[in-house]
Image (cartoon, rainbow, N blue to C red; front, side, top):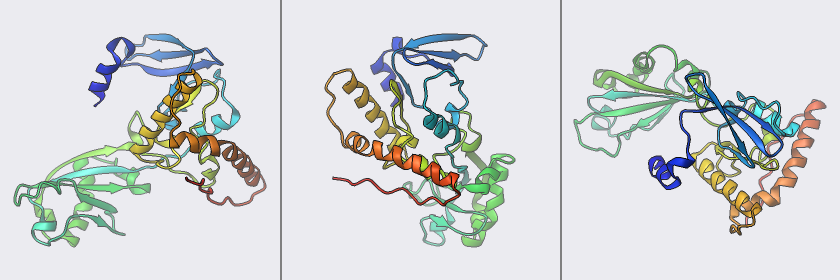
Length: 288
């Protein structure tokens, strides 16, 4: 998909292997990008769309960028999950071959949650892959040691639940550790205590600065759908502001109706925190 998208946009409009290091100005904006070889270059832009998570945007120099204090706060503090996955290869799948189960699992043991990643490949004896999905402290701990060592720490639990699992594991494993992944530094948005005040404010534009990603979605925060939805929403915002007559989507109607109230609620939440009062969860905007 990304290759086809790049071809549709045109190579002349894309620059790869460059990291955003600084954004400055109040419109037009100056963006500075660095390369692995130590060189850098600047781009002047009338509008900017920040499509990177706030966990990495906070590592960009924004000191001279025209941002409100509210937006700086949410960029700097928004919490992210510590979820991780470690996938083990099995020469056979005892959970369903021996025990007649799908492999879907949620427990209070060391293995938190998991599933048969190759469930649709239902050919007995062909082997498969089982994914362990963890979070919290366990998600952080999944990054310790090699992938095989990480999977080895939960194979005993699988053996207790589905006897035969330990013998069927080939010893091979792969891992995706989002908390230490350079381009995300976390799995997806996960509010820390007191951060309900950020709800629905993450994606609000600031002048000609626009924001998209799962963290900016009202309905699908934490999901890929949220990234796709808010990408379309930002495109719609820009087209409308340029007078190009973009149709009014449901997402934009909700944002326009809800944004003023969201800002007021965020201010009330900050005042409540200052008084030492607890915060309630956010009200849900009405849908039509």
